[in-house]
Image (cartoon, rainbow, N blue to C red):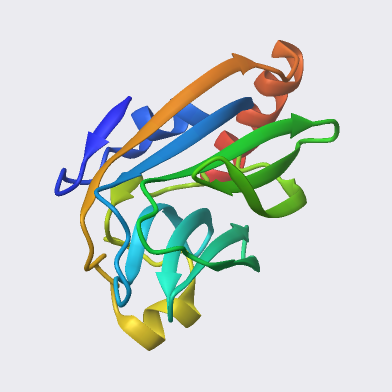
Length: 182
């Protein structure tokens, strides 16, 4: 699913179907990173769980909020002229994900063994170019507000892979999430 810059947030149900219990890839298309460009490239979630990719002080960061436990990796300086950033997410046993970031095809960082977002997380859908709703990271929100991306962001594309968690486990998790929500 390709989401153009400026598109309103994708609602939570459709957003969750792109990532739930599966591998997925996120591709960010830029018209060329310029020195001084900053802000959120993509955000999916809120304080209860989610992830975001953002540029701050010239460095690319991947933040991950696992039900309130926040981790971030500094993927290093974003080279001037960068056109493409990819995040590849792979399912692991025990409801975990590995997240890998690459910049113009070169590996730049990773967050390994993160708890998958399931049940009611992320509650908030996907936002392109801003962390539009409840923040994935309170620290980033305190420093910058919604942190709209100032550069030339074209689009963000989600490519979902096959579901990799057994159906019986998914049903059990969803049933427990429903009980917790009532």
